[in-house]
Amino acid sequence: MDGSFHSPEWHAARLASLKTTHTLTWEEYKQKQKEEELKKQEVEADTDKLMREYRAQLDAERAMKLSKGRNYSSDISRKDRKERELTDRKCRDSKRKKSKKRKHSKRRSSDSSSSSESSSSDKDESRKSRSSSKRPKRERKHKSRGRHSKPK
Picture 1 (spheres, one colour):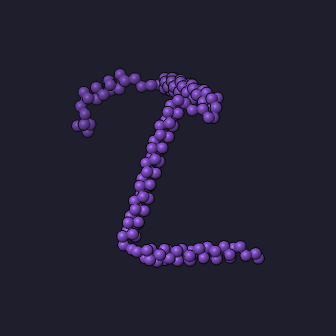
Picture 2 (cartoon, rainbow, N blue to C red; picture 1 turned 30 degrees about the vertical axis):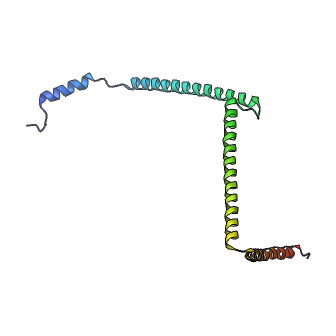
């Protein structure tokens, strides 16, 4: 035994396969690299051309929009704006109605509770207590005004 793990037939087949495969020479390799570089440049040129066309189209659209003026709006946006205004009005009207109903219900409940539970003298006392609670706030306001309005 010579220590190799492969038979002489395998070595013969291996050498034959190595001879049949074509390895590139340095000249062939340089030529192939040049061709690949040319292909890359063509692809880049095409993408640049497409990008320039796209930018030109965008610039043209922008110029058209700017030439129409600042206050110009398309029909679609006008329709949208009208629809938004109608919905806003409906919302505002419904809020007003709700707030009016709340105010009326508060008045009714306060009137009914005060008239049924208390007499006229009780009403006077409650008014006095309300007004007395308001007076200190007014006095505070006046005091603060007096401080700031004093000349130096």
